[in-house]
Length: 369
Image 1: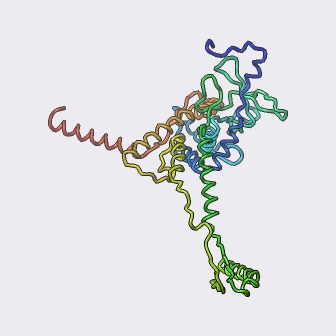
Image 2 (image 1 turned 60 degrees about the vertical axis):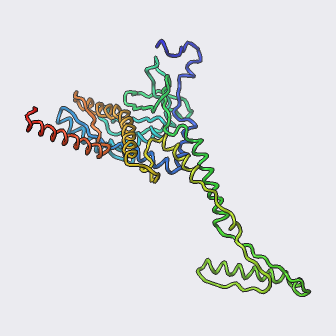
Image 3 (image 1 turned 180 degrees about the horizontal axis):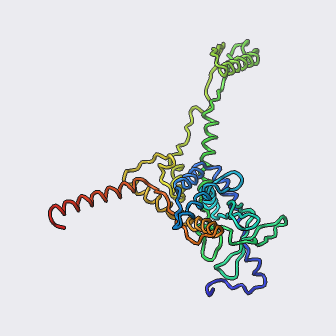
C-alpha cells in the first residue's frame, strides 16, 4: 500500500495488534445501564431492522438452507440465524465491533452452530498489508494466538476511521451528555428527598411566668413524644390528633422552597442523545410537539439509518449461508431480501401506482395512447 504507514521499524510488531476490548466498552455498558433511553433505542433499532428471507436458485439447497437457518444453535441458549444476527447487531451498535464464528463439527465438514464471541477474548493483528487482518484469541497468559481457521470468523466494524481496523460505538460522544443528565437527575432526587419528603419543625416557646420555664424541658419532651406517636400512627393508617398546651408552632421544613424547573436542560440533553441515536422522539415515548410532515421526514431518516445497518449485516448473512452451502456441496449463491421497514411507504407506492393506472385509463379513453 503506497498510502499505508510503513512498518520497517523493528518494534512494529507491537503496533500491529489491535485489542477489541477497550476501557470504553465498560463505559458504554455503564452508560446503557444508567440511561434507560439508550437501552430502549438500541433494542428498538434491532427490532426495527427487521427480519430477512434467503433465496437460492436451487430448490433443494433452498430447503436445506431454510432448515439450517431455523434450527442452527446460537451459543448455549438461542436457536436460529436471526437470533445470532440480533446479538451481532447489538454488539456492533454498543461497542462499534462485532465478532462471530461459524462453528463446525470435529471433521470440519458441517456447520453445527453460530457463536457470538466476546470482545474481551479477541485481538486483531494487522496482516501482510492494510487490507488484511488476522483474528487472534487471548490465552490465559494474555498472549494473542492466531486462530486456526480464520475463514470461519465473522467481523464487522461500525464507522471505522481511515487506516483503523476497529470501529466506533454508536454511543461515542454521549458520555459527557449523559454525565450532565445524570447530575440533573441526581439533583432532582436530592431535592425531592429534601422537600418532597415532608419534615416538620415543632417549636415550643415557654411563657414569661415563673412556672413555665421550670417545666419547659419536661413539656418539650412530652410534645416530642406525642408528635412522634402521631406520625407513627399515620404510617399505620390511623388518624390521631395532636393536642398541646402553651405557645406551640408547627411548620413544614422546606415548604417555602421551590424545585428548580429542569424540563429545558433535560430536553436539551435528550435531544443530543436522540440526534446521535438516529431515532424519532415519538418512538421513545417522548411526546414533543411535532407535525405530520415532520413525523414523515423523521420516519424517512430512520429508514435510511436502518438500511445502512442492513448493508453491514448482509455480507455476514451471505458468508454464513454460502459457507453452509459449500460444505453441503452446493455451488449456488444466496440473496438476502429484507422485510419492509415501514408499511406507510408501501401504501404510498400503492397509491401512486393506483393514480398512474387511473391516468393511463383516462388517456386510453381519450385516445391519447
